[in-house]
Figure 1 (tube, helix red, strand yellow):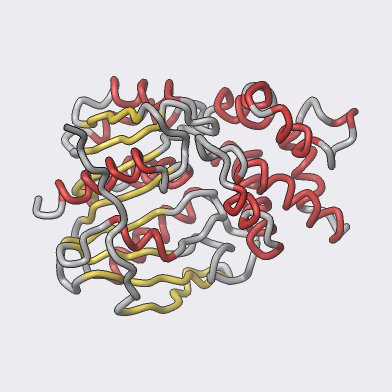
Figure 2: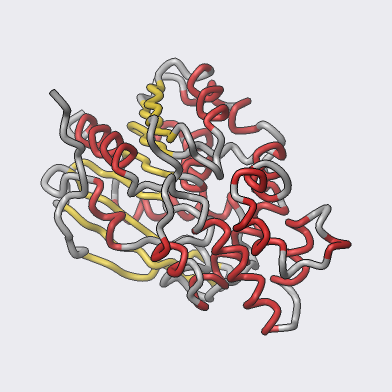
Length: 318
């Protein structure tokens, strides 16, 4: 007897939304969905620079959760668009705390995938007393090995035709350090070159996050507005190693002891190799690792989505 995959809850509109002034010239867009006063949760989107979309609201039972979603600095509906000033991991950790205070929650469930898992770990290790549970997908601990695997040598061997498009905007002489070669162009003054590079950077990710090809997803990563914020912010974070010490998130996992967690990871996740989720789970006895065999990286892949919703359902009444 085969089990039926859980899938998204029905479409839902926010019951409240607004802009929060977090200082440094940044305004953060936030919204809340579900039932006011129900179990508090926060959704941390990926990228960095990806922003939230309507599907992100739908991984929680709206009758049992009161969920805050927000666009991180510089992306989505937050302003100023694609801004790199005062935009670091630790600014975002502080923003999450401001948003928690806005909601009046003492503790909340923290949900994050891909870069969102990085940010969730950074937040939880900084404010463990504020986290009731963690639901994480596509673990990314932002070590140099992980960055090199995706942006220098590794996934290049698995997706050579997409890699060719990724490196095309960069002169051959600079291809020994693609992250910094892109950084020079994404922060430069040549607007035409900046947009070409933003689209190439962004669509490399869009083309490698799913197990099977999804051309519409790749196209969506190539929109001018999305690509500029996504590529500039993501590259900015990655050339700075997330302002983390090498191996910091794994080193400090002891701070999460006692916090229940579910980690969902696709066997064939290209951007975020399974090894790092495995290492994290081994060091964190309260975390339960769910390896999804026929899956890549994306939240919407059936096996991954199934496990994520089972996790939020499980914690709904905790």
